[in-house]
Image (cartoon, rainbow over all chains, first blue to last red; front, side, top):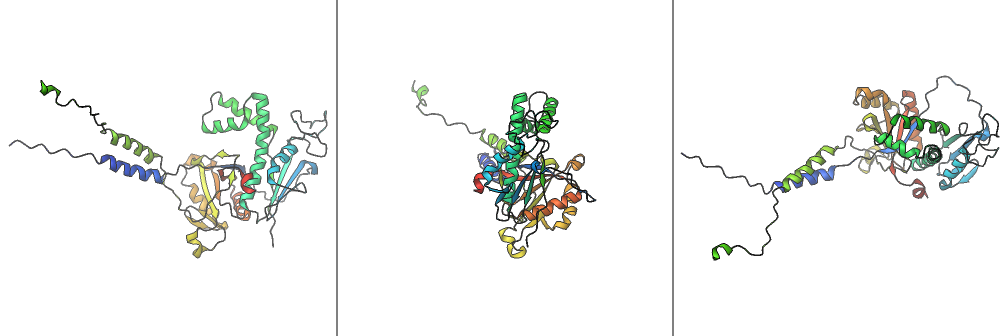
Length: 206
Length: 159
C-alpha cells in the first residue's frame, strides 16, 4: 500500500505567534540604565583621633538645612550658583608665589583669604537629617561637577582630551589607544585636583 | 496563440512573506536574550533624583539597597515612614549587614571583595535614612558606594 504523504502543516500563523512573543518581551524588557555618583566612604576609626589642624580658609563649608536651603561660607545661596562658588574656591591658589604650596596651574583669583591650593582645599558638606534626598544629591552633583570642570580643563590643557570623556571611555572599554598610559594620566589629573569632600554626620533635629 | 498570453495581466505579484517568521524570530531571540526579568520586587517607591555627573555602575559587582516610602499598596501595612529594602524584603538598619552578606554571596567569587553598594533611594526620602545606611556600611567596611540617579539636570528640577 502506498503511504499517503501527510499534509503539510500550515505555517502561516507562525509569524503571528512569534509576534505575540516578541511583543511580550518588548514590553517586559527594561534595559537597566544604572548610573550614578560614586563615592568612597571614609573607613571606620576605632579610637578618637584628634582631627588634623586645617586652616579655616582651606575649608569650604556647605550647609543644607531641613528646608533644603543652602548656606555656603555663611552666605545663603541658590543651588545654581554652588558650582561656580566651588570652582572659585578650589581653583583659588592663594599661596604666594615662591612658597612650596604655590599652585602653578591654578587660574583663580589668588585671594590670600581663600584656599592655598587644590590639594589643601576641602569641601565640607553638612546636611540635616530632614534634608530631602533630592537636594542632597543635587549638592553632591554640583560639587562633583566643580571637580570635573577643573579636571577637564587641566586634561584639555595638558593632553588635549577631556578627563570625564576618557574616564567613561575607559570604563566602557571603548577607549582607543594606550589604556595604561591614559590610566596613568587620569591619575595625574586626579592628583592635581584631588576630590576632598568631607561629610559631617548630620545633626539631629528635635 | 492565445494560450501563451493568458496570464500576462499587469498584476504585481504578491510579496513573498515566507521569511517573515524568520525575521520576527530573530528579533524575538534578541529580546529574549537581553531581557532581565526584574529580580527584586520593589516594595518602596523609587523615583530616583536627577544628576548629570554620572559614572557607570559595573553591575556584576553591585549589591543594591533600595530605600523610600513603602509603595501605595503596602502603605496600609507598613505606614509611610522611609524604609530600607534589600533583596525582596524590608530590612531595618541593624540587619543591613546580614542582608548584604547574603546578597553578596550571589556574586561571582572573584568579584566579591570588589563589591560596590548601589543605593537606589527615592528622591522624597530624608537624608537621615541614607546617613544611617552609610554609617552601617562603614561599620561593615563596605566603603565603595554609588548613589544611583536618573540622568537630568538637578539644578533646574530643584528650582
